[in-house]
Structure formats: C-alpha cells, structure tokens
Amino acid sequence: MEDMAGRLDRRGIPHPDLLVDALWGEPTPANLRRILENLPPGVSELIVHVGSRHRQESYPTGLDAGCFEARERELDLVTSPRTSGLLDQLAVGRVGYATLRNPQRPW
Image (tube, rainbow, N blue to C red; front, side):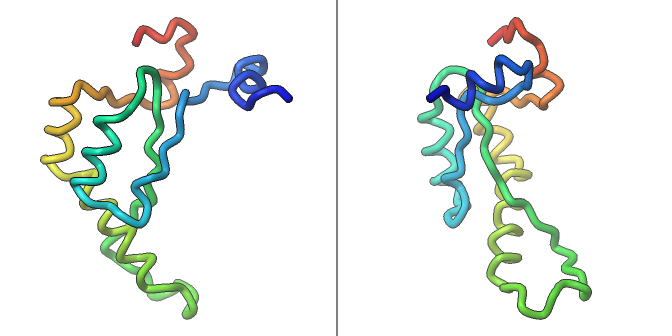
C-alpha cells in the first residue's frame, strides 16, 4: 500500500514530512523543548490547538472547560518570547504552507 506522502506528492499537494501531536495534553516548556530537540531533518508540523482567552458565551453548555484551559496554555506557550528564543537557539525555522509549495525545499 502506498504511503500518504507519496500520494500527496503525486498529486502536487504540499505537506510536511512529519506531523507532531505530542504537545497536546502537556503544553509545557519542557515538553516543547524535548519535541524540538528531537525533530528530524525536514519539515515538521507541530499540531497545536490554540485557544482564546475570550471565551464566548455562545459555546454549547456541555463543552468541557478543561479543553479551553488546555488550548489557552498552548496559546501562551507557542506565543511566548521564550519559545521564540528556543526556536532561534535550536535553529528551527518557521514557515507557512506557501513556503512548502516550493518544490526545491531549500532546507
């Protein structure tokens, strides 16, 4: 069976080389550092579920408040100056999908 990356490549769909979802449930500086220090070469996408500090009253009443709190912790973590400094220190670049469209992938 063909791998997903090969199918996406054949269709010309840009994609990261690796998806990392290990931050969910433990959005701490130590966990983020561990993840970043162990990234393989290539393009990795760190999946985050950032939230907003401004919870809307219109959310369904059964929605778990803990979900909001976890998303807010992720937002705080990924937008902190310490995280930006850590990315710089580890030479982890930040790109968007427009950059992934470059077939040469200069990294």
